[in-house]
Length: 222
Image (cartoon, rainbow, N blue to C red; front, side, top):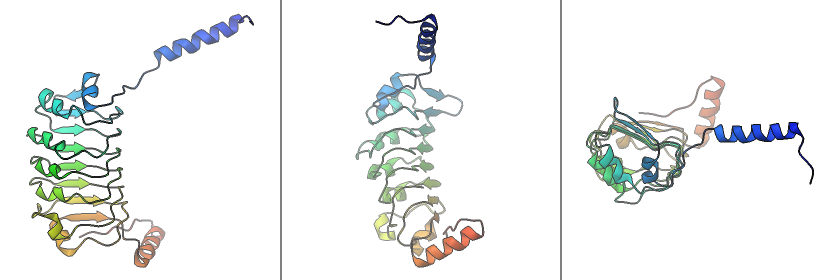
């Protein structure tokens, strides 16, 4: 066996020290795990931060209600959460002060019907996921002001009848960077101010090219 030279020993020790001192990112399989580890709750703003924890399971969401009943903003961004089943998000309806729910950069394909039960919700951010169907349940949110579903896979907007409820008038919806096949209908746009990328029609392609030449981005809206 070849003996290590003093220089080699020094390098090995230095590498070991750096490895021990390097900050480790907390990993959690579930929301319960994340709450059991070090996490941040800002008592001034009543904001709970559970982002970048590699959370893949909704188990323990009820613990958020038990531990932080006054939460106004809940951050669950940049995790590995998949579509919650009906009966999961309804737990958040018990957070009567909840105003903002942030779920961007996860693996969510569908937002369940019980989303509409979170009556206090004013802002919903679910960007950069895999949502294919516009969540009609948002029409039942009486206080909603802003919804961002940017950079998902939504191809069609629902009709007014498909919404199943009369939505709160004046809310803003961001649908930029979704592959819409057609523009939102006039009745939907009567209730919501909608930002969306032009449908990929010949007109949309030409409009986008002209806008690019002018240094802007083509956006549809009310």
